[in-house]
Length: 259
Length: 379
Image (cartoon, rainbow over all chains, first blue to last red; front, side):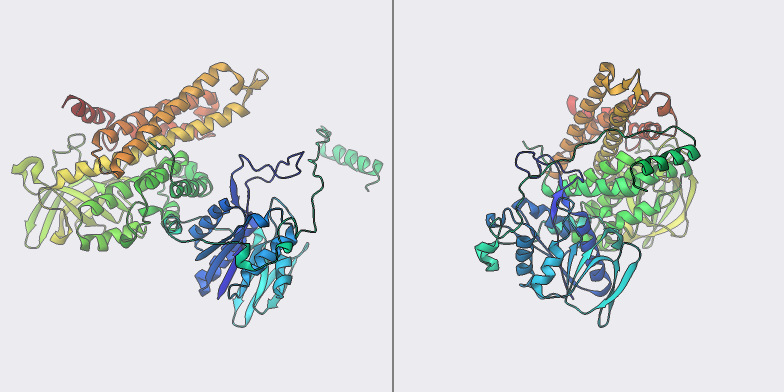
């Protein structure tokens, strides 16, 4: 079985600060990590490898320093890694990003394409589904369990209340949520091995995509302005008995016509 | 001169830090209380390749460098000095000793499973009457055909009741003094070998410090390590390496106490403001930080000397002497910063303070380190 895992290197914080002038993320001084949902995707791929045998290839589109995220993925047990990097990709929205990643995936034989549900810096949850569309393969999002069966996969897709059990053929694209598993740590032996492995570096030319489809040019979404939400104040602290405070809270909600 | 870590070393540090914080730290207070050997930690360390970091992959190791191993002991000791010394004694004293002195068969038979963490290692030199003066070995080994018959006892052996493989030193020829000491590899379960008293200790309470008893214990001659009469040199050289491991443990304890203190100073409010705003407290934490950095410098320098093939006995002695003193001083000050809370088991600095003391004693007391350093200076 061949599994491709798409990962993204993101700043290690859920409270990303935004440059008020440029409207972009301030990344300086914030350490980078593999996006948490992508870690669940990678872990599931590695578990399938451990239990059923598989070749796990990790790909990422990003700046040259995203290589570190790939080395970490190798140190967890991935077999191969590809860094897709080119100045032409800069400013890509989810559509332009998914085009590039899908074009890269097409260069491999694959049974499963894994991605995280969404990245903690963008929170769009669009890149995985868009890739499946470009690849013309089925997709199951919000995956909380995967079982390998003789004729395909049995997958649990989380819903707001409960979950849905689905059977699928391969190839398929799955997006992982944190309930899927507990990611492993890197291993000391694999860390030293990871630095002896070559990471393939692919640019726009390698993917034969028209430059109109890449980066800012290929992105229908343009950020005009971003603002950081201002704190509204401390809120009100009620110091009453449980019964009184419940009554008080309900009256407040009625006043505001919420209930 | 380069003070930076390589990318591999940075990654090892990050990996062990995450592992230590998530897996080891939550158990630290409990195993201190129960004195139960943390098998769970050892199994997990084995799974993640931490039981043989600085040894080649052909011997089951991770294929890493010595500083990576030292960084692992340091990061573990920040949260649990017991786990730090289990790894240090296993790696430096047992695996290191077999790697440096063993033949190919011994390495394949013992080093491979030790490095994979399938087996745990220990090193048995100290006796009731041979502590700092390790030359006064009373344990004897008498050749009998293709075996040696071992009689005697060892005390204060780290991993003593839990290890599978022991490096044991014994007199094979008393008339030759230290040149009559020989090293052997002894397996747990060998007839005539038993574990005696397991010590109750002030600190590192779950590390299994035990007495080993040998009564007509027959060791096959292929388990002789190095050559007959070479045991004392093997022991001293192994301890030079071991001292860097203990220095790293001491450094880790000091850093752990420093981190806890800095966090607490920012949280704890007295007189309407965090105590960190008091200049007296700031001067205290500044001194603590500076001493930790000085200790780190000595520890990493000793690693660098060893890794680059220089003689490093004095460097290892300086690193252990100073890092152990710093560990005592920083943990003492940490309790002072925490005040009454620091004296209770509610916060980890009380445990760190108790754990720190042993670093001034084992693998050569601070006074022995001074003997080594003075001998070098005055030679």
